[in-house]
Image 1: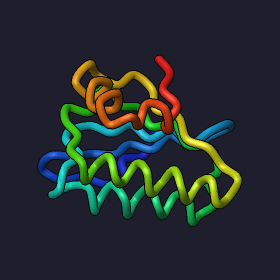
Image 2 (image 1 turned 45 degrees about the vertical axis):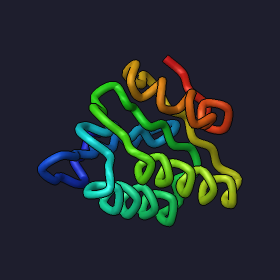
Image 3 (image 1 turned 135 degrees about the vertical axis):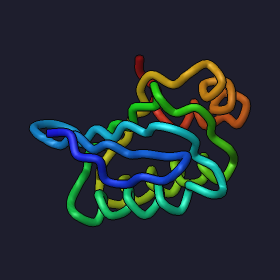
Image 4 (image 1 turned 90 degrees about the vertical axis):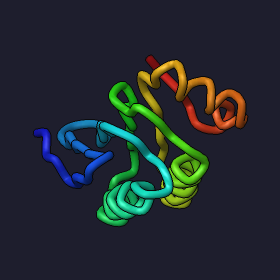
Length: 111
């Protein structure tokens, strides 16, 4: 079931939870202005018991270092709970940022 969980001018998160991992589609920009919203909502999912998270980045237009930091924080929180995270369908610019920073070696990426 899809459920919009957060909305701002530059960001929207849609959570689909059912059988299997929790899929969160990130729509818009994850930057210094929107990263706190993203971190808060993803952290709330982990705190509520989510152990397997898939971040769908197909509609994420931009990410800066603050946004990358959010992904690392969530990765650590999930690992502390013996959980996992996978990024799917990043746009070319996002894939490049992940590669340049080396986070593509830390955060699993799938198409």
